[in-house]
Amino acid sequence: MSSSGTTARLLPGGPVAERVLAEVADDVVALRAAGVTPALATVLVGDDDASAGYIRIKQRQAAELGFASPHVHLPASTSQADLHRVLEDFNADKDVHGVLVQYPIPGHLDYDRALQVLDPDKDVDGLHPVNMGRLALGLPGPLPCTPAGIEALLAFHGVPVAGREVVILGRGATLGRPLAMLLAQKRPTANAAVTVVHTGVADWPRYTRRAEILIAAAGVPGIIQPEHVRPGAVVVGGGVRYEGRRLLPDVDESCAEVAGAITPRVGGVGPTTVAMLFRNAVVAARRAAGLG
Image 1 (cartoon, rainbow, N blue to C red):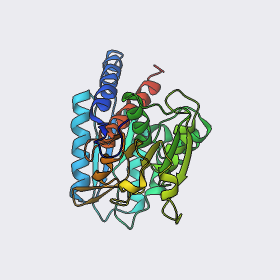
Image 2 (image 1 turned 45 degrees about the vertical axis):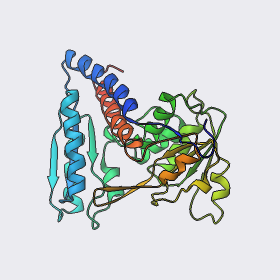
Image 3 (image 1 turned 90 degrees about the horizontal axis):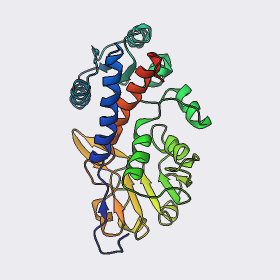
Image 4 (image 1 turned 60 degrees about the horizontal axis):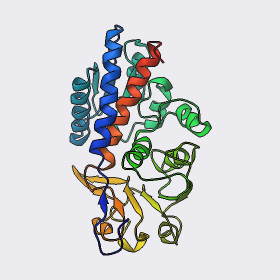
């Protein structure tokens, strides 16, 4: 670990994603040999440029891996019932193994209600209430992609987690809460003492400054500054916001002067999140094919 005033070791997500996707590609070859083409369906509602761009990235990745990628693009005026019908059709389609509804969706629609319509076993985001329950109980099921990607990133870069103090700033349902459950589980790449704190706690820096591993998951640009980081700590920037296509991370880049290791501003957790999406999809295809 480096000391204050030096530059932290970078923890890029690209190599982690490459390893995960190589394993996914091997699974796709095995599935195709068994006569099964894994399929990840995507649903886009409206015409948000950034969301459309993310769908294109996922479709390109699907093609590279050998997935089928059926897609439905609904107008911004779509009703809740119309969105539900699309999801019900994908639920009933045995050739579709995973379904992704690109978030955000137009404000008049309820994303959580739509998510509950989806078959939990086809929920590649791992955010269905059934899958969150499976995570809480330690049962098999698709894991939320960003938390799973963070665990894989730490393991890949040789960052010990077991027995260490992990502080997560942020309690959101997509990152902070599931990540806390994941890293507290009894497993060589987890088994940590996890504290979840949030911006509603007036003295939240008191917690972050003691963390051996600090994970920012607040979605507040620049909230983590060098004075919030324990010298030599591992810092993972999980929370981001977007201004158009510009990424605004929770962790200020100057934290690299204090941290011992840190994820880069771009290319950190993001690539691992996409990789875990396809891992969830290929596991669902294997399960549906009776291959485990």
